[in-house]
Length: 197
Image 1 (cartoon, rainbow, N blue to C red):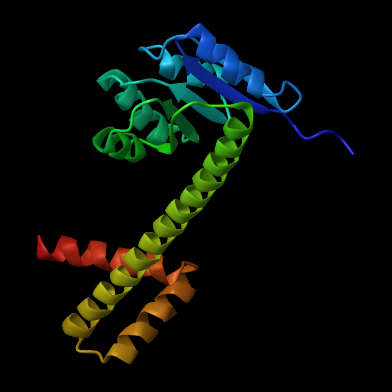
Image 2: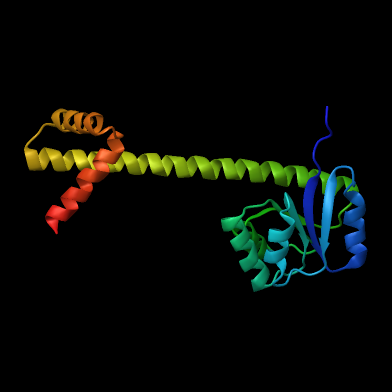
């Protein structure tokens, strides 16, 4: 059985002493760590270059650039992000969570704590991504259902059909054209819009 692939970690920390503690905690057998001493404008480039599975940042007060970069990472190429800090600030935590941070840890960090925080952050991130996907699928299904209802209503009104007849008409059109009924509904709505304009 081949060994499990190493987790690629991008670690952002300016303070070398703190960096050494966390780097020592991340066992080389389990983690492949890239250390970035600054979280300036190069953060996006570094994430793009390193393609990490996880980002760990130790910043006391994240700058606007860092928050913007986290927002971009979250929307374009989501990654679990762990933020380490010695300060508790509710507003900062709220802003960072909205920017895609999976875990915000206050206080000193030791080897065991780092590993458990990583495990929790990875699990929370995966769960959040799954919920996000399910929400998108639900929105798409709702949109298709809404288009179907609107097309059916237009047929009922324009052709004086019952709801059942309108649906059967759309179904027959779908079969004849080799399309899904949602595609036929979209075609009908496009026709309706063209006739109304």
